[in-house]
Image 1 (spheres, rainbow over the protein chains, first blue to last red):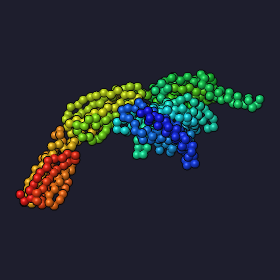
Image 2: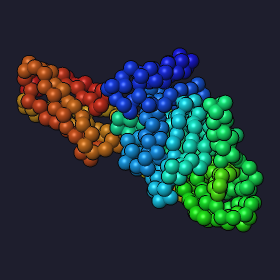
Image 3: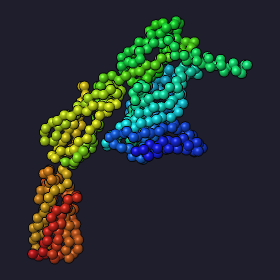
Image 4: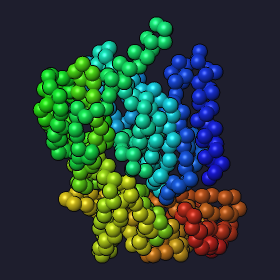
Length: 177
Length: 286
């Protein structure tokens, strides 16, 4: 399992490197946040290398979309990597932000993600994410809140036809894991 | 001097503007779906913001008075920021914890499974409160299992981070296997169809008549005695002077049958899936 950890860490780094090199090809790829997946203690099923790669990449893409969504208050940005309760909650959040004239800016400095549950049938994967996020909330042009402390999330991802979706994304206390 | 002072002033104003001082006093934790009272100090009007995982609220408040947050504004568990802005902004953070278990999401795989197959069935239950928050504290889920031949048994699972799971083998008898996952008032039934496994002791008999031979199997069952379903394909293969010939035919009423024209002596075999049956030698015209 150790090589896999190293491999995913390398992969996540590769995303960042790749983003810098292919800025002309894809502007969105340039801002993919760094995600490092640790899968040493996943149970009951071990994670396949290709699955680890997909989960890592898709989770990074989900966070990129989330950041764009709450910055621009656009729910259409949630359709590619969010589903279920996660999508519902973010849709409510954006509607409320738009109504109140607020927007949230995330500066994403990366995610240390620990895969803790992978169901025997391969249909669900639970992750613990410690995210290094700078969060700034604006009311119009006025910044009303700013935070740089780490955020912890309990995440449930489920596979679709060609990607893994974030089905649940719940912020939890610092003592949760 | 001016160049040094300007950033210092900006920094100082910034620190003042986002000071986390004692203007707002919120409880550290709240249970989801319960209204919250946040006390404030100071005087004058301010704009109050509540930033939660799925809700954002903004309204005018009077400092010095309590701010009541409605229950449905704190239905989602997670970290909330309460902010009051007048000339500067003050904030406090509180956590909304999931309420008691009230909902289940229950996944049972596969939908059909051959009998007597070890650990072929897996069940995963997710425990949520009434607001669809994952219940993080450990909770007990009961699984009531009703086997095809009638008996019922119960096994319990303790959740970890809202999830519990188990695997079990299918039982020898085909039919409907039901598992009901239960917690509090939530019951989620799921059904798996246990079907016959591979054919066992496949046997045919031949009835020659002139240059033809009629073949019929005995009732086709798996090793536990479950009849294979009608429609399962059985293959009869004949090798004689005319070469090799195969007839695929479905099981009808537990049996499969076929008829061949013979050209001299023939060897005939029968197979069903991975199971091979007996082989017969039949003489042409005998």
